[in-house]
Length: 273
Image (cartoon, rainbow, N blue to C red; front, side, top):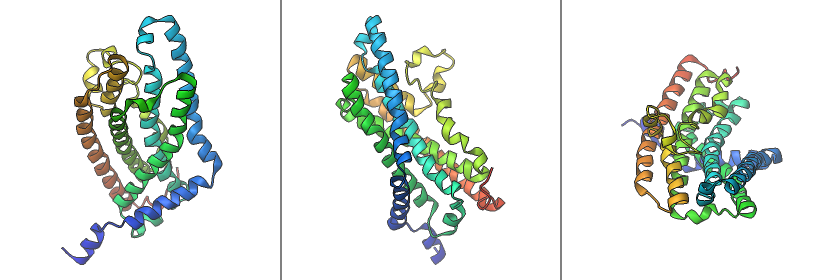
């Protein structure tokens, strides 16, 4: 292996930490950014919480499955905000027209991706943790009572959000800011198929196999099994993990190929619409 190849494959935790520090300073210096992280999850949780409270008064099944909707809302926020947190940090570089500078620096693509993944967790915790406390205060719903299951849910949802965020970032990198709407909307394409608020059996029979190809489906089914039947199914989490490995590898591969295409076509320095 040549010296140049060794440099190209080298990994520097300091470069990853430097990128994280950059995004942290950017985040903490803007109170509107911090408020936005908490605002939408709070609105969603309170709205769906009161809807469930009303339905519980009218239907015996929901009295037995109390908390299902609130749990689904909170887990959906982990999935959606995880992907959005990744994509927003990436878009900050596009908006500031700094992406070309980063790609010409010693920063490696996988170091860039690791920094974005870490910041997505930071942004997610800032936004979701206060909402889980509000869910307990308003509706006596304790998400943390799920215990180990919550760790499995969180890990699988984050892997999916990173896989999607990596691929979307590649699309924006290759096609410019004209493709940034995918960062805001792509998760809503998966929402009906991942069965966030209803069981997979609700879908038409021909659509159910497609639903089972998506890792979050296993998470939401597992959440309902705990909330309704008080049973944790580790096999669902293992299936989700296996699918996530495929999704993550595909997302990373797509990002690298789109980055190569952007470099080849000279679009790194042309980040407009």
